[in-house]
Length: 163
Image 1 (tube, rainbow, N blue to C red):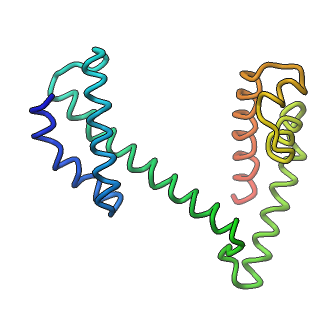
Image 2: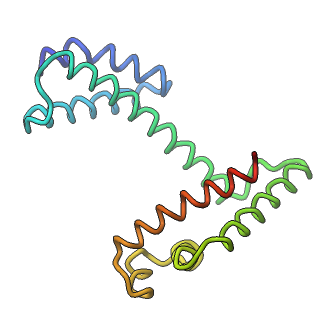
């Protein structure tokens, strides 16, 4: 493992840096990936074969960098909404935004029961999955499954609006 670390830390760090453009984040992700590999090698879930480990290292660095970028983008969007500085400058952009909100509301109303109720409980009433499960006399696992189904249905309905 030490040889793997010495040989691939810098190339992986530079690879992460191409995604993130932040030295500290690139170091954190690269170090975290090596920690994961070390634990997997110790558990035996990853063979010490150099080829397999190297492929895993590069793939994991890429995935973690992309996850970090998606997370940062979501935080940025949330922050803009909280501060009230959404980038809606022109009247046309405001109208498009309001139209999109209306499309989301209509898509929610098209959802079948109990998916519609579950979505309204968890998002509009801000209930936890546990509270929603108790209210609807079902399991938390079923709420998770139904919410996954809701998201797929909503994506499909809203995607059709734009095609």
